[in-house]
Length: 312
Ligand code: UD1
Image (cartoon, rainbow, N blue to C red):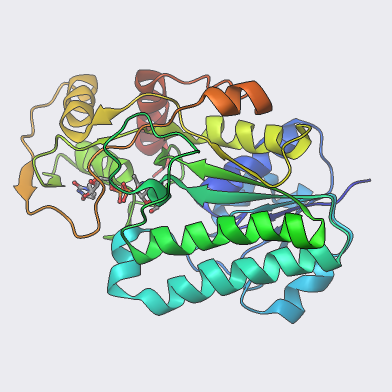
């Protein structure tokens, strides 16, 4: 039996990946998570089939024996959020850079076949050109973006210097069930869902015409699994977006229509470190990984809203 590790597997994206792996028939899935932003509840339905190691990736000695001998490590553990990395940069630096180094090192020393690393579209910053292609020079404009980019560089160097197979996937604004709306740093769509169902007014930072390539969480889980098995991809970076972009004003309008309500948003000042537009060029991921996003924005929003309505 092949051991599969998901760091951050109790988080919103990690737990979706764990479920996708179990559906595929992987039967030895282990999670490393310190439960800082993730929670055990996210793994509730699959708890009997998953081993949860409550460990922090900053603790190199603790994680090494868990990672030892794994076939694949999906490294998703991180402190997300651009504004959080500005307000409180030290923990995100330590987890996103030092912790990531520890995961790669444990994998290289522990004979792991491949590490799939959750990188971020924030690496692109405000490029003039859309869509954003992997060959563009990175222009990080927040500590979070720098941290995630350093992880990509380490992924590449662990491949070239230590022979570890790594694939970095740049996630683009992932949304879906289980995204926690409980923090000011939560992803905007989880906050929109909460406001919509509570009939409260969302705040949009800036004019709402900024756009994002919002990607449904199950599509991200699917491309992670593909990145673990694709050939001739070691050491490379791929966009894991949908190849579309939608403004916040458009999304809030769609959600109001779905609920049959009229709640004008409040507009605040633009957020520090914010990128204006984000949209993935998916050609390389389609060609090399067989990436095939399944969920349109309407379908993804509908499924997400249904989940919040019945569960949250
Ligand atoms: C960024 C990255 C994304 C990464 C995420 C991790 C980019 C383009 N994307 O997302 O890949 O996964 O960090 O956290 O860099 N907003 C509001 N009102 C709110 C909250 C947010 O208007 O209450 C706005 C923000 O100002 C921003 C947009 O919504 O313009 C999206 O914000 P957020 O969901 O926090 O994600 P990004 O920072 O875009």
